[in-house]
Every structure is written in C-alpha cells, then in structure tokens.
Amino acid sequence: MNKSTLWSLVITSMVLISCGKKNTKTSSTISPDFKIEFGKVASKSVFSEKGMSVWGGSLIKGDDNLYHLFYSRWPEAPGWIWVSHSEIAHAVSTSPFGPFKFKNVALPARGAHYWDGLVTHNPTIIKAKGKYYLYYMGNTGDGKILGVPGKEELNWVHRNNQRIGVAVADDPNGTFKRFDKPLIDISSDDNASDALMTSNPSICQRPDGGFTLIYKGVGKKFPLPSGGPVVHMVATSDSPTGPFVKSEKLVFHFEGERFPAEDPYIWYQDGRYRAIVKRIKDTGKSRIFSLVQFDSENGIDWQPSKHHEISERVVQWENGKVQQFTHLERPQVYIENGKPIALLCAADTLDANKVRHSFNIQIPLIIKKVK
Image (cartoon, rainbow, N blue to C red; front, top):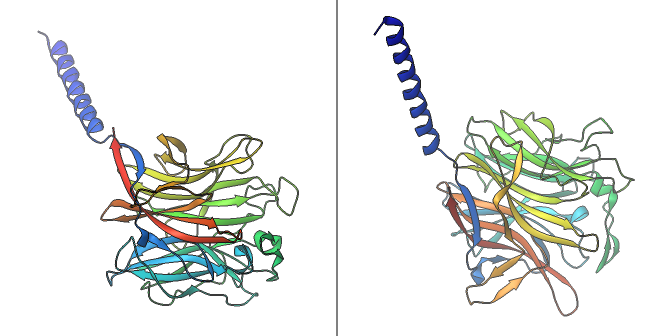
C-alpha cells in the first residue's frame, strides 16, 4: 500500500468517526414534541373577588415561599370596562393551585398625564437577574365609560393609547418601580404593523441570557378607530428592561385573517421555544375560540406544533363535571423546578340576569413528551 492510499484511508476513517459522533450527539439531543392536556380542576383553584371583574393572572413563587398572583381587575357593576378602568392587583397563596387571597393593588392609577396613568392590564411576571419584572399593558385617555351595563361600548381613545411597559421590584410584596416611557411603543412609520397600538406582552429568557418578547400590535391599514389587522410581533433585548429591537417578522399569522390569534404565553424548554396561544378562527359566520400550541427553534420563526390543538375551552372539575366556557383565555404557564405544572386562564360565566362574572382558574397541566 503506497503512502497516498494509506493517507486516503486515514482521512476516510476520520470523517466516518466524526460523522458517527455528530449523529450520536444529534440523536441524543432531539427536542421532543409536547402533547399538552388538562388535569382535573379543584374548586379551590378558582380566584374571584366580590364586586370585581377578575381577568388574566400571572403567577410566580417568591423568596418567602408563597405564590404571588398578579391579575387584572375592575369594578363589575359598570360592565366590561377593562379598557378604561383596569388595574393590576396582587394576591397570595401557599399553593400554586390556590386558594388565593387579595393583598394589594400592585400597579394603581397614577394620573392621566402618564402614558399608563389610568389603566394597567394583562400582566406577565418573571424573575431574572435577582429581580422581579412585571410586564403589562398600560394606557391613558378620557376615563369615560361608554354605553350601559350589558351593552358596553369600547372606548377607542383608551384602546388606541395602549402601550407595553415593565415595572421592577426586589420582592413581589414590595413596591414596583414604573417608568415614564413605554417599553414597547408604537412604530413611527404609519405603514408599520404596530403603528396604532402595542399590547399584551409575553417574554422569556433565552439560553444565551437575553430576552425574547412577543406582543400584539395593531396597524393602520384598515379604517380608524379600529385599524388593523391585529398581528403578533417579536422584539429582542440583552436586558429585561430593554431597549428592545423589533423584528418585522409576524408570528401566529394566518394569511387572510385580520385577527387570527391573541394572548400568547411563551417559554423555553427542552431545546425549543414553546407557546400556548388563543386561536380565533373566523368561519365567516362566527369566531371559534380555542387554545393551541406553537413551537420555534429560534423564538422568531413559529410553526403550529405537531400536537397543535390543546382545548376548545373545556375543563373537567374534580367532582367529574365537564364545563365548556365561552371564554378560556390569557393562558399563562406556571413553571416550577423546570416543569410546567399549571396553566392559569381567565374565564367567565353569565348569571340568570345575563350579568358577566369573570375569574381566574388554575388548571393542572399534563405534558407528555413525544420524540
């Protein structure tokens, strides 16, 4: 065997060994698909307040070993007036499944001259770098209640003044520091997808230590005051308080639909970004709401998951009763020790007088990993 042939065999052997190692590594690190199911819900896992509409809770465990729920609320009697009168409140429990007890208002009204001076709404709380970061939608406006109870009209001044903010605290029981400017403002270009308003932030920390935030934006393509379409966009930052750089990529997008999705919750687990999203499917005659799952390799490009459908708003109680809600939305995943154990959702019912009663519900999560 000459030297040339021997060297060729050595190179071939090295390539085969290298490929074998690479394939072994790849096969051992394949990110599993998640199949998400609901467990049975206990009666204690419903949080409501007398005389208040309660909506959109986000949960975190404090250094005091208590579970801290941050949620939206507003007076029930005037009707569905979240857009002009919501505030973010704080409740605590010894269990992530409740019962929870009101403690204080975390982000109260602070004056119409502030960008978030009259309304705070739709919280998402995380802990990062030793501090607690409370992300939310805020707005200001004329403070008017439009319409009458049961036939409320959306206050478009408040709706179109929606912006995204963050408040910071050393302790979830403490005072949250707010900022004089939004974290995610509208884009100055009138052709931008978020030229009219920004809202509903969801955020997670990336493996590299940075932060990916997904939010709802509304543009000015369609006539005002409603504008549209309603889209979801991505912004990234090295810091939880920004500055965030926006991507032009639209996510959870279905071609031809003006309002296809809402209320995403995102997190990173097992080598993949995960999301639970409220799907709004327009049939032309009605809108069908459900909870669905998306995933992503990079946090920017999202696809429907293999097990896309999660629930058509159906919950089974511990007593065996099965209930389908008209609304089961604002999904927020509570993760403890790296494991998602609860899904917090906002829900509501109508009483005999057609009065809408809303509350938060903590649903046990069953996640099956499928490769």
